[in-house]
Amino acid sequence: MNTSDKKRGGWSWWYLLFVVQFVVALYPPFFNKAEPTLIGIPFFYWFQLAWVFGSAILTAIVYYATKD
Amino acid sequence: MSGGFVSNINWVALTIFVLLFGLVSWLGFAAAKWRKGDLDQLHEWGLGGRRFGTVITWFLLGGDVYTAYTFIAIPALAFGQGAIAFFAVPYTVIIYPIMFLAFRRLWYVCHKHGYITSGDFVRGRFGNRWLALAITVTGIVATMPYIALQLVGIQVVLGALGIQGSGLAADLPLIIAFVVLAAFTYSSGLRAPASIAVVKDILIYFTALVAIVVIPMQLGGFGKIFASVPAQKLLLAVPGPNTTGAYTGYATLAFGSALALFLYPHSLTGILSASSGRVIRRNAAMLPGYTFMLGLLALFGFFAIAAGVDKLPEFAGGFAAFKNNFAVPALLLHSFPSWFVGVAFAAIGIGALVPAAIMSIAAANLYTRNIHREFINKNPTDKQESTIAKLVSLIVKAGALVFILFVPTQYAVQLQLLGGIWIIQTLPAVLIGAYTRWFNSWALLVGWAVGTYAGTAMAYSINLTNTFPLKVGGYTFPGYTAVYTVLLNLLVALVLTPVFNAMGTKEKVDATAPSDYLPTD
Image 1 (cartoon, each protein chain N blue to C red):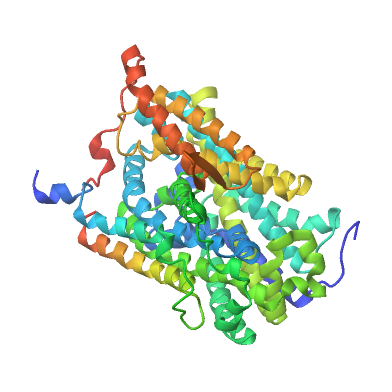
Image 2: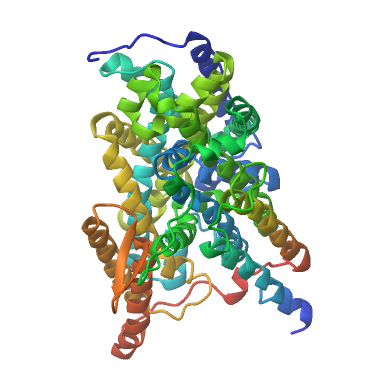
């Protein structure tokens, strides 16, 4: 088994970025507050909307960093 | 207002709605010739020949996962109950890591062995036809009320266009829409919703982006909108002592819904129709575009509160008929000229056709492969197999239509809620099965039965609401019933696996090899 075989479909440390997505998205004490607001939108809403992009970027990083 | 047509038909909006509906119906029939394949083969009819690339898969899965009912129901939940409705955002964030890792493995093994359904996979992996049957029946039963709810989406926008009341005249538009849907699904298979999804999504994105800018301007900005939302709806309630309160309710609802999503037959159909594992991985990074839009749409519930649409006399009838589901249609009618309303409502109506078509195809694939072929006719020709699937797709849709016309909507909503609890019970066999064959198939079957029974009983004990107040030593953990019961299911399967193995129950050979789950080249 060489390293490219290992990467292929097996475990990669880059997958920890997925764990980050889960923890942030599923821990309400992080974001269950009104302040600071963004153009009048409470933190609860704009943060979770922003995290959609954050997660997509993390997934894209994993996509480029790992082999098929 | 009994016995038929109600006045106040919005003719401009209705005309645009009908024109766009006609356009996509034509597209649905024309799709049979798109990337032409032999539609007498089940994988051509039921999976589009597994040829969809990154872009089409994006549209198809987008139309599949983010359904018309979602676009109506999530803002309605925000309108009625506030912050909890936003669970849809974390839910549709964390589905993508799951898709990226686990469902890519399933794509490879299904591609390698020609599997079309989760029942096919479980049959091959565990060699146990009864376990496969349990997975199949669960998939079909969980899908049926989901199709019915798509019809509710169409019903609400038709009602908002002024077609309300009871009797054949009022029901006729819905019946016509469904007959057309059934016809093009029959003739074009999965190619129909795939092509329609493109049109639908352009309309939906157009509507959402215009509305998210224009409505706040009309209402005096986001600050004013959120100031008009009652404080108890604005955020999740902070948990009191000895309970995790709304926090675990919110998190488990998102987590459980995410685990359940790709176990639904229609999601798996969308995934398996992709042309490569790379398409799945790419889409895991691209599909959050829809999640963002769903989050924006959820905010429409607050716009509706700020605009006070439920207090306007012209919408009293709509709210009486459709309850909070009328919030978004009322908001659009209140804020926009008729032509724009027509486009927006067409987006929602067409948005119902796409998932309804995919769901009926997925249910038909399951019946054909895992019930008919397994128990009735073991060696069908390709032509027989695809013919059965086409007929079953008609029966499934007719069933959903009858259900919606003759049974109160509330039952479809409750059945769909139960469906989420039922479908998650297939997780140990399907999702964990994609990684390991460690479990004994009979132990998985018992775990499935225990989880299904316990989930149903728990759901009834809390009057068919979502969160079960689990009490452990004076502490209360409110959480989504599906999460608690799938853990119970797993525990049973874990404990019973060594027991069954020791009893020497004969386990069939695994038809799949470890390398089947990985890229081949």
